[in-house]
Length: 132
Image (cartoon, rainbow, N blue to C red; front, side, top):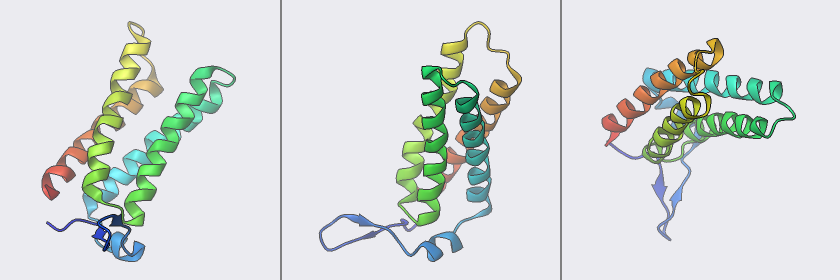
């Protein structure tokens, strides 16, 4: 499959026309966008709820990371690169939750977020495999 970025004369990847990028998004892409937005909102909410804890900064940065990934996808950046970056980003989120909260991992919000992130991880892997 074709990549989502063009190569400029100097060899650097460039952004495609944003409208052309959104036209080529599939239903699976939109599922991933919704899952990333849900997890991003949860992290931003937890960041505000945990102020003034230093952990709040991590939550806000993670939330912004999810929304940043969505923005880059919609803007037309290289999708395979976004998948390759998104897979470990989400994986670290899942691992970090259990590592930081063990053995008290039962939290309705936390487990819901991890379910959303597992689904997002599956979507990212499927999209990467489709476009590889």
